Image (cartoon, one colour):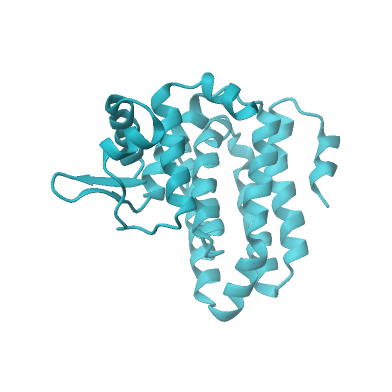
Amino acid sequence: MAGARSDSKLKKSEVVAGRIRDYIVNHELKPGDRLPTEGEFAKRFGVSRVAVREATTALGFLGILDAAPRRGLTVGRVSMKKLSRYLGFHFAVGNYPAEELIATRIVVETGGLAHVVERMACDPSIYQQLDAINSELRKARELNEWIKMDIRFHCSLVAASGLRGLAALNDLVQVFFRRFREDFPKALWKSGVESHQQIIDALRRGDCAKATELLTEHIGSHRARVGKPAEVESDFAE
């Protein structure tokens, strides 16, 4: 009954899109696998072909399925890059509380650090890449250049975990955080760069706990500029 009430609040095409996604998951289909035709889906779900067409168009945009004139519908390869751009816009215009997004960013960015430690121990070039980005950040003189390099550092840090899904989520959150960077005082740039250095040095030593503590403090420092009491940081330090 709860599902029926939820469905009633959605457009019919959105409900159909959800059922097509469920069909793909329940049948354990892989990219390239053939799907029923739009007519078959319409009959299966008891809806019009128009509703199915709207649903497949939306799913096609996200890369969840592909539609070809003679081949019909097949399971697609989801483009995380495209999905990140689309959902990143949602984050950017959504009225999310600053504290909620700071906490989200802490969870996402610290969540991959143990993997970064493991990969860095096997591949020293990961440290070298992060160190080089941070060195470039030290040379930044203009705000736009500093913002670009700071985002690049944080995205590269999460990508170094090798967890592509986590990196995609991080890209979404970074879109919103551009707002916080746009009024970041130049007087604090140096301390931000040094904080980056301490984090990656801790990772190179294999000290994940210290790196997590440092990164949590680094991201949490935004609270002071958005009017959030500093005491709240202790909630995320453990």
